[in-house]
Length: 220
Length: 360
Image (cartoon, rainbow over all chains, first blue to last red; front, side, top):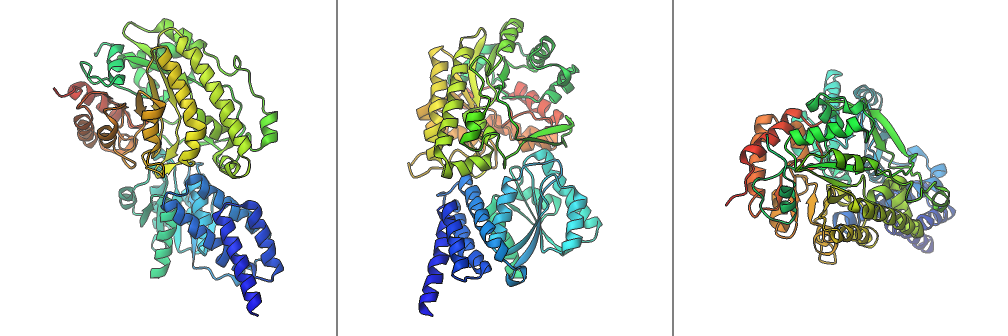
């Protein structure tokens, strides 16, 4: 029994380290080892790869990792998920919250949004990613249909950022604004702008965004 | 109307104080030029006579001492997408780089890519034509449209580039080598051309929080080409302006920032592109102003969104804090994009004409 636990711990550490080391081959190998060793796929995600993503986030905050490393960590995690997905059963994983996320209408920039979605997923959120160029009515429809805790919006340019206000207006008009927390991010986004348009928070980067979402769920 | 005098800009680039604070823009979107000249430049072929005449008219009338013109490389891209343009002066469709997909993602793509010869890689005839149209007192601030890092990230896509850094370093090295060589060779040609007064490059290296890739990689793959282009300019007696967005001010384990290296090792004469959220231009001026000229810095977001009266006060503050010691030209922190309020752009220039003096 002890040996099995040690073996499990070893594999989970390998998974964590493969994410931190941005090692695509290593993560695929460790995921296969996890499955062969009978480790539940959700555990390989939450206690292995997700722990690695946390460390990646910390390294980014400390200035040891840069945007390319955040992107690559997300790519590495995706490769691991490809191996684990056939073994993942939705009901096995307890989610800490649900987020609807998208890049607003007129804007096709999605690096930041994709990193946030990956990190949220790793942190235990169910993420409904609406993609790019998302009109306000699609955000409203997604909120009504999925009943999320949080809506996240991203924009790259000042000219597309103003669409965020339209989304909030549409959520208000549909009577669902007060059912969700709203977080915004992207190059031109500031905390003052978030306040002005009635969002609950603005994130300077993906890591801050995920931390804010986590703190909201803790307070719930 | 302020008569053009190119020596003003030159003095700024030598960190001196000309008679008045000149204006500097890296670029003004064609929709803005169309709105202010009444000429349909958005429908004119790039580099044609009417296009260039309208460009000259615009920069002359608004009080610039030069005409900027950058020429794009003929490098085919398949990884671009379009969406409806939401700007005030909409161009209907805005083109976006597909960051998740590259035209070149692997070694096979690299080898099969239709790399043009140097002659085919760019058409410099519009710079020749522009030289003949320039009025007295104006020169061309010219270069290739896009920089070494930008072209590599455009062709590869930022996600595949990030991946290749960790999985196919040979590809990354060859991409930077190919693009860096191409741009520097073209810069050699541009620097020889008639009426070129300044050589410049636009090469965005980062975003709000830092650089896109590790500073060590920028130092290894990008800055040597920047340095080469600066040397080409200087050999011809031309100053070199670098426009580069992003937070380049973070000190890393070397004890230096990318901005430190641009100023001290690469040897740029002037830096353009500033954003208040990253570091207000007056703070950059205070830190680097004795070593490099600082151009622009009026925050884009404020130009696009502030009520004009508030913008006026802010521009006066920018001038007040950036003008001491010379080596400063007034302009936007990035571009007069088609979503900037035209009245704010004009207000910035008006304030510049009224208060644009270096303190004695």
